[in-house]
Image: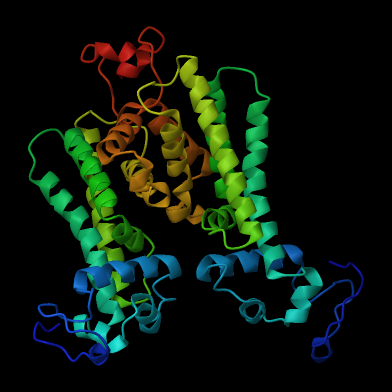
Length: 221
Length: 221
């Protein structure tokens, strides 16, 4: 990606806009947003640079001014998603306190990343592994999953999480629920991020059921 | 779909197989399985009857012997998925007992349908709404979601489910978790269906956290 003035083959038909690089209206950031939207609609494999150029209303060479390849757009997009999740994991890794509290922090932080970066995480979660960028993303997702499973295991060892479910399965179900947000959550529906994170933590940490102490004394075990 | 002997254009090159209709090795059921597998790989829109014919190794006219159109294959596939879920809902509708128990029955039954009909439910959950069959499937999914939300509402009214989360959100999160199975559950991984349903119900109904009675007396409220 160069920062010098690029060749702009179709600019001659429009008025010059001094002080902006590339096609009017697009910088790398807005271009990336449109690309991710299109990848999510048609699949990464099903989207060509030609499709992207049509959607943006600019030439392919104007796109190549910003980014060398379609794969580089994918890399930037999945990095933003997985990078957000790893930032939360890193916070949790250095946090003091019981594993169960750190797990809750990880869930809340991940919900925030999903909501803030919804199209990016959607793309990440639908990656197939057909290219090096995708395989790398899948490897980092597995690393994140292992981090969650280890945290569940630690919380179980500390006596705070029920021991009757395999920790890897608990971790998978917990993040299955978190990740399912991409299927239905839309910010305009009026549920805010904190309300959503609260609901997820209440359900998964404490359960939906209102428990009567008298009725279920075995639950202290 | 006819049950009389069909035209079999390329059969002349193979030995006759008395007693089988259509192309050797395929009846409607096995054809449907291959079609669903392909739809899940490439997307319904991205799969042509030509692709299907190549995957099956039979001519398009041999496919049309079994089924009049690609859309009919989709209809059969999503019917099998949504039909299974509605069968469970119907059982639950006529069951006696508290709503919370009926909700648990619905979750367990749905997990069984997902596991038994995994490729069909996967297809159902990825439908976009571009055709009449897809829009009909989406409408039936919404009907199922309303059924779940009503059951959560009833259980809340009966005092068995925590009232501090909107019932529609609780329902969505609960089935978000159930539906997330399509992303990772594979029968060969050695987790059986009952173990899976148990884990999901333990986590969502009772929570992961081991609660100390002494520490949290407010939880009776």
